[in-house]
Image (cartoon, rainbow, N blue to C red; front, side):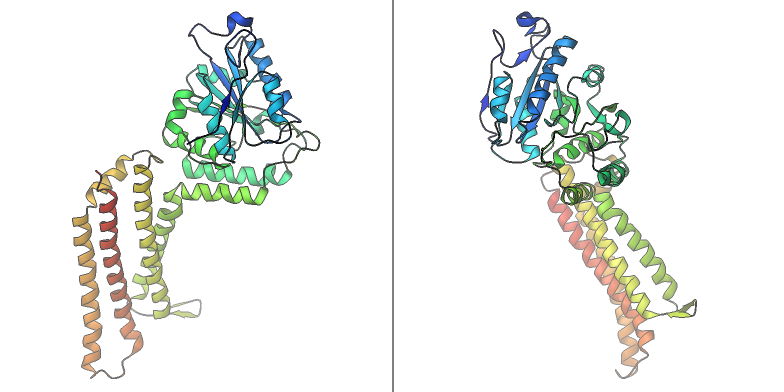
Length: 412
């Protein structure tokens, strides 16, 4: 993918964009390269970009770190590009719009062993990167900032985000992906170049940061947190975040990235509840609180089992697709189940279900023919017809599932 041209703004007498506390002699460290790259996605941040860049450069000098600042410009028209070039940092022009596109291009252009990304709106303090770098040097793969433990300045985060949206969505993320992270949405985070290759997000928008954390957690990388502060935006700055749209995009990402919670658990609940209710009502009507439950409830129970079973099939197919695409790590238990659920096994199991359905349907038809196809007690007939239709449906679904899973595994 073409991310646009890369402009190297040279530092006086040294490697483009690299600075260190020791002047020109410190441009190349003992390992012969840049240790830390700070990547700032930028879209019309002329009010704050200069402040952010100077803070990062000041941190390099104060901490004696050989580093570089990369501004991934996503089409700014307010002079942000000129500000960055005037400060002698590297600028990556990213033609394709999107937060993820900008970060991906900036990270690809980075030369540091470690990379720290953060927004260029001066809400994060780029002069206080020491805890991130210390954790990265200690071997952590991804170091997340936590604004709730570090401190949020009054007015820096909308009340709805601070007390409802962020905690709720972070809680969902922690539940779905078994993450210990307490702030899924902190934009200031650091990671090693090697770890980035393993968790490389493919999202082009705001989901990029979520995917990075989720994939790092799922693939067993070392993830840690450090307290960080969040400051208010510069006066007159327009926020890029849209509350309801981005909140929905987050929830949508969580669900689509977790077949277990989107398909498996709901499907399992439907199958269990529908199956138990169906078995309870199959012998005859039941009265609960003065209300009689009969074949109509039995029909709903059968429908629940059908939908639940289909959801379980979707979960299995989605998991195979995610593993094949490298979105999910291989699962030992799932791979065992996948090897057992071959096309041949699905054909046998599906055939048995169909046979059960045919037998039950035959019994219903036999009872009807015994009455010379006249009027029958509909309640008695439906107690055979509903299980017959359910068994036939489950049998056909099983055969189709086996065929589709076999198709997904043909490459193997």
